[in-house]
Every structure is written in C-alpha cells, then in structure tokens.
Image (tube, rainbow, N blue to C red):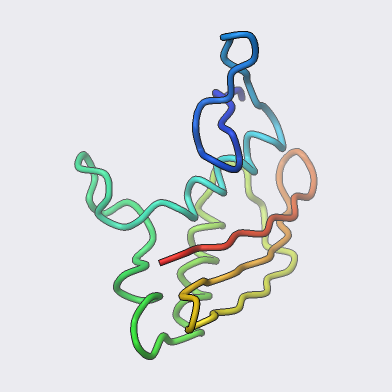
Length: 120
C-alpha cells in the first residue's frame, strides 16, 4: 500500500523538486500511526467520533495513567497493518503538559519503534 509522504516534523506534504513523495510498507504504517496519535477527538467535521480524547482524558488536572495507556494502545492496535504491541512506555510531564510515549509494534512488514510527544 502507498500513501503520500508527509514531513515528520511539520506534517506538511513532502515535496522534492515540486513532486510529491510516496511512502509504503513500514514507513506508511509508521506515518499512519503518527497521524492517528495526533488526531484529536472531534477534530474532523465528517466524523466527530474519530480521534483520541486528549482534552477529556489526557490534559486534565488529574489524568488517569491506566486510562490514557488503554486509549493509546487501542488506537495503535486499530491501525491497519499492526499485529501486536511489543513494548509500550509512557510518561506525562504535568508542568510542560507533554505526554510522551515510546512503543514498538509488530506489523505485516516487520517491527516499528516510534516515539511521540503529544503536547496540549
């Protein structure tokens, strides 16, 4: 499966000499995971049930770590091409309002390890 490549730092279309770039296999799954983990619940007007409930469960005064990990793991496992989660570590920095997650997954194209910082 192919997809249009996005710049990992900005999320903008990745262009080279004014041509779109493509990702496939493991890179496409990794890009899809990063997009899904940044997608806020209610953000898309065509499906307000899609996304992660950051403002409901994550960036509140007393977040429930077990609930947060459960939501993220469910989102990861619902991603096309993911077979299983091999490792998962998360941390919430309340002062900086940053939730960091590092995980490895088994996919149909091999193993992927990702680090995501989710900022409120």
